[in-house]
Image (cartoon, rainbow, N blue to C red; front, side, top):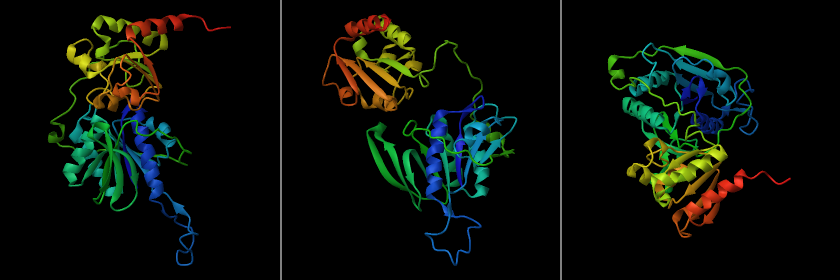
Length: 343
């Protein structure tokens, strides 16, 4: 059995959780075993035996039975719902304890999305059980030890490694693979359970959440992102980026240098220490392309770079490039977008 931690909001699974489920399903298929009732194993050759993938289970924290419909489309057979009156807010040690209690099901692997929460919770699971953990994996091949490929050094290289342990713990690098639905499981069983939690499991927990109602799509969910770096020159010039983003139905982001200068809030930062984005189109304006920034935007389907320096590192990663001053290019793009399409 393969167990996957599902992060959700309002009963809807996060996209990164569906990506983790996709890798989990591939791993389950690789860990196939002879199907029960497929005949006498003594008279059936391995080539003739019908192989069944390892069962795919999921675990979610809090009451979210509506998850079942979404997860069934990704091959989940059993959804374990950890329910407790103190699990209304995130508490990493409590989440970890809930997962530890599911070890009685003897999973071959426990997989989580490589988010701040996913990495933190699985690290606590590893600490409580003495099991090793591999973070930010992009691929995994079944075996003992498990063969994994993972992102290292801020996304500048991929590492092939082996992961041992009676139960393999790994997280999936966000946006390293696409979430792929499959034929729904014939039936998905929901199994609520109440983990035995102590006061020490709540030493760290979210006390309250404050959300800003901007009326805009979040940076992580936007289909179009217009990002600005030092080449924007000053905070006032971000008005050009705002204008272009509005016309394209997108949002504005920035590099770490911009937040350090105080021109934009940290919530707008794209990069290793900011938000990781995966839009259909990312327009990078006046951004050189430091590794830390490229880690944050590597999930973009298409990258357009606007820069006066044709040798900037970002040009090696860009699908399209405009060599020019963004203060001239962006107003021109906006004027072109305002024109009605030709008849």
